[in-house]
Length: 354
Image (cartoon, rainbow, N blue to C red):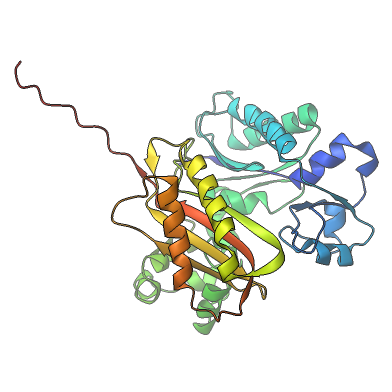
């Protein structure tokens, strides 16, 4: 049985700002560019008491908390601190799977730090982060990744929660099905139509019925409802997709998006070039209308794009598959390259003579 720890830094970007500027401590801090198109990157816990949340429009955050301190994000500094956090994690195991700058999974079934339990590893990590970096982190300890992530959120901020194997079924039963990864509003509605609102109620439905209704996702729902998650911690997760997007100062018609799509596609191609052992096959165009309606269009050509210009051409061609009225205005456009696969190794040439 695995022993998994999920580490999640508390209000990471905002906490770094408060740490580095003492006058901000105890005050509501919102990390976001100002402007009509900006969204909140992070909010301190003082700001969250006013309803401010990540990904919220910055202008709404300002209305909710007009006395908050708004700071533009400094990702260079956040990445530097994130590297320090991961150096601490690496002291305990080589099996560290970063999810973002501020969270990671660790498999500490056999910790190299020699500590007697996963709980002690989590305590040691949190202590080191507090003492060395003057920041706080929450931790979840459980037999698998699914449960560890739920546990890390259980006593936020600055908390530690442990789900032991014999506690799994009782712990999960009363949780709303929305706590299961992949269960969004649409799936929640479908389950509600079946009379299912909790994990315990989901568990009572036969796997065959869930699979008939929802395909492979139904099988996955059945497993998670029983606390089953066999996915391993992957220290070097291969790249699956690369994307870039831009939000406009003023809404734009589709016909005006060409130069931005070209620039974003070239940026994506440059990033993909840094992954020579992987090749992307699917080109994705992402659009968000002025009314916040999100739509995507994608194309997987018979052979993967072989140049920046080819990627640009495919991305531009996807505009022709947007069926919205011509008068529609867009606030955001993005270009992505996904469905990455390992590049095939070059075949050795056959020798004519030995």
